[in-house]
Length: 344
Ligand code: CUA
Image (cartoon, rainbow, N blue to C red; front, side, top):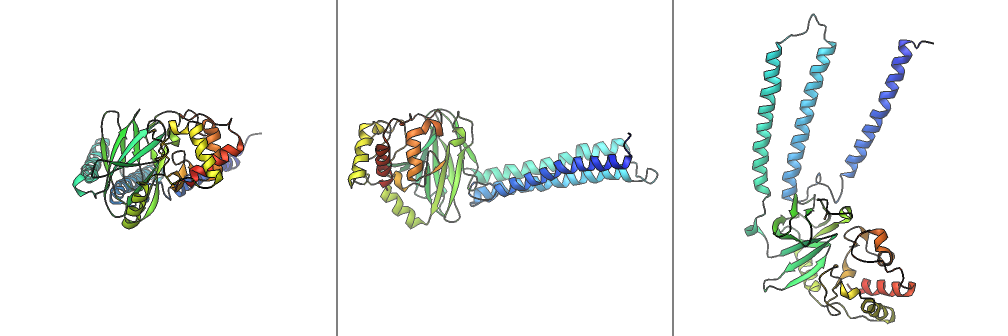
């Protein structure tokens, strides 16, 4: 039986409306995902604001041009041919194909070049806090450089004083990584053999998530970190506390954990100042208990996640340099976790 034109058009309408509904829903979901602590659409510092402005100008400019093209297409389709304006094709090509792109792209280029100038790191404008960040596969070494040349080390969590521009020096120990905190600034690569600079400035206290933005191996996606902006006095107190040696183990379980830490060679890769120094392979754990996340910003720092990571780090983050310690007894894993969590 032949389909009537009406039923055919009803069906085709149904076919196109389903995918477009899905598209709208997906777009809305994606837009919702832009909210929060890892979003360049929610700038929380002057550099990120410049970048967000460029993004919005490009978005609305592109939307206006799309609207114009759609209106012209509808005009061409639906306007009665007898009443339609018929400009010569030469005029259309010169206006729409040459003049319009030259004018809009030149304006955009001029604005972007001007905006890029404001994104450069400005050492002279920075506060006294100087931070060195070293990329490793797949975590971040963080050193606070003191005026006397000494440094205070931590990992995967960068605290900064809110309202003060902080100079961050970026290096890498292995391959190219890219340092990106979308709420605060643009991306900058960490390149073997050189030091790059970026200025981080947060308007107000808050926590932001950063992510390695250059493919660097199998755990690239799990090479994250957090930037925590704090009121300057809180930051100063935190930094002073981070400079201290690790707290002494107290209590049976915690002491047992410290002994296991030494006995099972954790101290060969991880520094715990006061217990052992080994700043070569793994993150400094001197004040591990004060960090909010573990495994380079990928898991919340709590006892259950920590035990799971020690026992099965190759399952949670395959390819990382820490072997599984699944052969340890449950009691030992418990004690190890208790000890590390006690290192506030
Ligand atoms: Cu480091 Cu991707």
